[in-house]
Image (cartoon, rainbow, N blue to C red; front, side, top):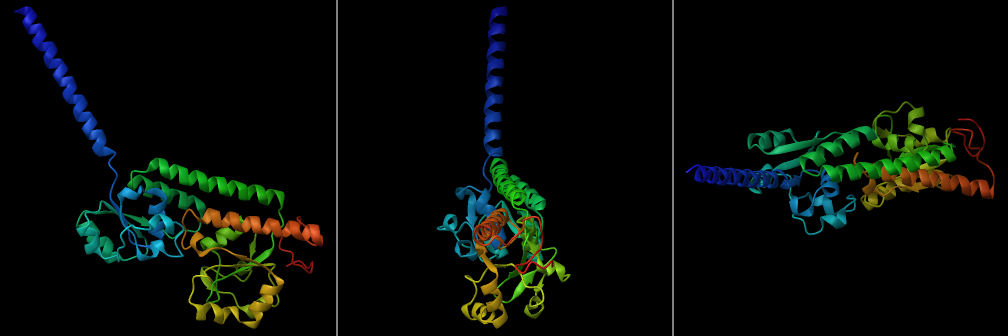
Length: 311
């Protein structure tokens, strides 16, 4: 009888262990299941396409496959939404990525139906972009992919810093959009220009945020470089109207024009590091070309124009 009792106890122990291991495996599988995600903005498209598995993306915005999307090729074939709350509810989505400044009504409805959402802040520094990557990646169950995206950003910015150390010459530059608008202090464009080694003329005028740099004022303070973007994605009449301005054409002839693809900075997202690297390389290549051809630029002088006068 004693042996039988021992055998029954051992069998019971084994069964309990099997039940525990089976339950643990089922919990782990459920815990690592990919969350179904959708986007409510172009910027959200970029984060999702950079971080999510294709199979967990339920829908993206209509801009995800357009010229402003850095990952347009990845978005092909993924369903499109129109940002309506009922679309997200009907699709049984786990999490929606939205802009912090977007529709408050959408966020209210999502919360009412217990649909999680992640808000993307409008930021002007790389540290906050990294923090946002971490938050979105975690919400999607893609922490390792988030780490990879951050590693790529840091690698690009490290190359930028090395270029800046090799060639510290910082030319004056002005940024223009097709409507003539520019970028001052507190914008991610200004942050990228500064990190790439340029002195943003808008800062000298005390400009903050998004605004216009008067072309007439640039006559007294001509830039060494012009950074442009969105000209290739803007309505033709808008781009041509500003591009045909006599002073703009003059500056374009005299200054180094750097066209940054719009898809690299439609918002403050990880691709901003790539835009920064592009500008830094263009600055250094232009400087080295001038050194080899004319020997005009002095790398020890910052914000010095072609005529040699301090700005």
